[in-house]
Image 1 (spheres, helix red, strand yellow):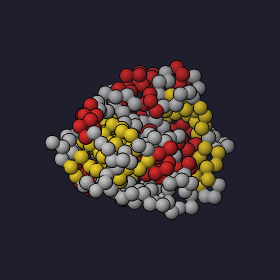
Image 2 (cartoon, one colour):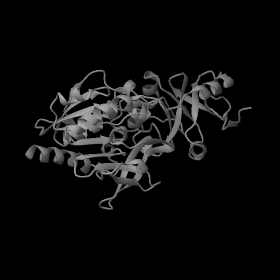
Image 3 (cartoon, one colour):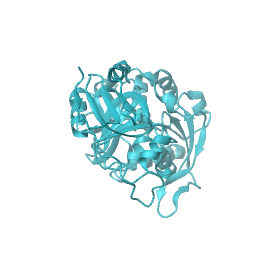
Image 4 (cartoon, helix red, strand yellow):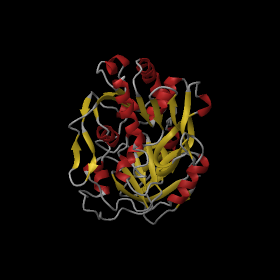
Length: 388
């Protein structure tokens, strides 16, 4: 029989794990049932950015920080048009928002966008279970009447196929190409346009966050965004000074079936190439390395990463369930960054060429400016190539 954990008198939501464990709580947001992989995020801020990060497709996020919803939501903080994460799990029910930028409360925002959430959960116990057993497959249900078919929920959790072998980039990428010129937010003007770009960049969208594109614009780039399925010919037809490979969800090996051949041809054009997150993994695959599934991944805004060359430590934001296997890096490709949590790979670069990538998210700025130099390095590489 399934074991029950933390059951209030009248639960309106239920989180069912594939092993039969049940967590009861109070539902908010949309009603219904959703199945996904369950992960946890340790960030103390940015719940809206996390929920709208396309890299969370196919995942329900457990927030270890209890004060979720207290600053409300604002369209300015969306990383893409709508929430992409399948659902959210929190300890305390969201309170009324208390922030001058808020335009809506979290529960209403989730309900309008079809995302289920559950509160009143022992998130510490749940997080320990994820760390010890690996990211589980789960089903999350919200019913205001508290009617749950437990056997059906557990069956749905067990039937979820998981992220291994799953190409999700094609589900979150843009439908057609577009231009981007909006720079990073700055007081008091907000998001100002880039009016004097120095470099033409093609960004391949595997699930790009808006703030990454803003950082490229702030670094002096005129950005053209292309879908994940763009061929090398389509990329190079824009005559770019450099090519950017974006973040995104799913199994990199699955996305690599169509993306890796295109990236290989781009590399032959001898252009500066910069990748982040899934883009980092795509570049590694194109260079001959391999990726592997992690036990529970890295999700948070407090991850220390060391730059190998300088020994400098950056506080970074991360969101990935797969990692580049350092042991498979070919000759001429070196590890540039490493996680100080577990020693996993966090960056690579090609010796003698302006080709590099990182696993973490430099645009998320938890440091807050620790990692922005990566965008500047990309811009400098393009400037040097044009000077030659």
